[in-house]
Length: 595
Image 1 (tube, rainbow, N blue to C red):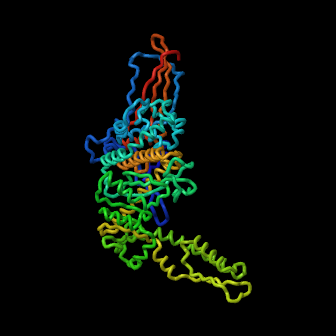
Image 2: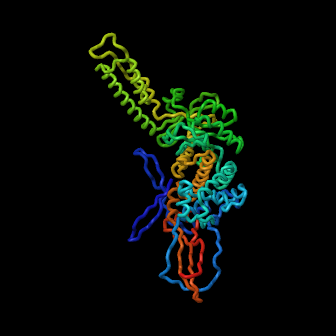
Image 3: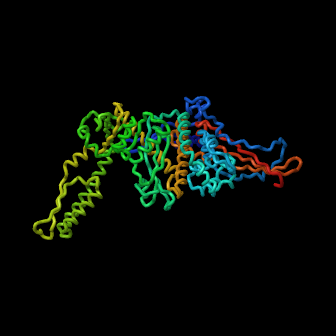
């Protein structure tokens, strides 16, 4: 669900409010449905803070003070001054709302305290936890390179006032050094976040979703042994890449990740990732959910040998093993257009979850029709070429047929094709090319379209429950979409292995902030899509209200009040729902001297 800003005019007055919208599938296609309209809250309605983590112990409950700006010493005087009204001006307008929110989330997760304990304090001018906060908040708000942070982003934001780090202290050398300082603490960060998120949102770690993606590099990456060419999910096979395996909970909350060589097959990462998770969090009887790209008999045997449980996808070809169950009628509907049933598995302690989807059937039927039509048109051209005498070599004809079938692989079995040399030329023809419908292929296509097969060693007998657990794997896939699209994980510009590892760690931390905000919004009745909220709060600015003044003694001074713009009515609704109070003023700076 996501937020949509709505405006309407009534009785000559403009009203702004929010609608909570969800996308649904209907017989006419995808549609959007309004779940609720969000207006001003009543005085007695509970705020987002009251909804957040209802089972928390009192000492773990977050407080709104986490989002308060730091306290600065201000001039202590009650002297009355005269202000020159014509000289009042506004200066240094900077982005505030989004960085203020991200900085508060950083503190809510206890990252500032944890890094202060993990990184030894030395003679550095800027504390390393502050540098880590700058890198992560920048990745959360406006993902870009470290060079962009130095020259553009940090200068444009009010993070200087929140962190107390001056603009001239933020440069690429310090940001790169901050990456180097952060990376050695990856494991400690993952453990801390697992515990903190579990406390905040009462998470369940019994069901783990695992998926792998890839991200590519700009450059040769000569200093990175993991950068290799392999199967690119970004459609960039020309670039070197690394693979990233991510483990999330059934709600999409991150538990841990690992970086693998770019040419490593997905199934080769499973055993390593399972061992890493067990080393960190123990060998509990967790349920692993993985797609068919991870599945191999060796991996399943590995999980069974460790008393592990799993729900995995299977290759399409395995549907043949349950062909007779496809024609039976005892299907159970789990949602509109999706039906499931159980079937015996290949091992004695396993079972199949046979699934068929009406939408998927329509899609696969259209695909088959398109490929069969193309294949038939190509076969007709082969026949015409043979009859006209342009195609006389049997081996050449076989190669052209193979190329045609490869180009239309999904329909390649639709026809039985024979190519033979004529004993005597018939006119110009030297070859006989004939084809006929393959009835068995068409029967199987009609029977299997829209069907897929899952495999599990769970003893659960409700196929609907097993299917719903597997379908939660989309949360892991959505996590990669967030890191790639929202947080711009790709492409990677770093060339050395340690810097690449640190860059991905920062992306992981920013993703944790993103999912924390999503869970917080969900508890506050704002859906679970943070992008609209972040963009809306980014419109809130901070600026310096400059007041030229003169004291009764005649001494001139310049009073500079660093203030935050007043949120509009719609932004106030969001802040109210989250239980946050926006600061009105950050600090005051006085300058003695001529105006």
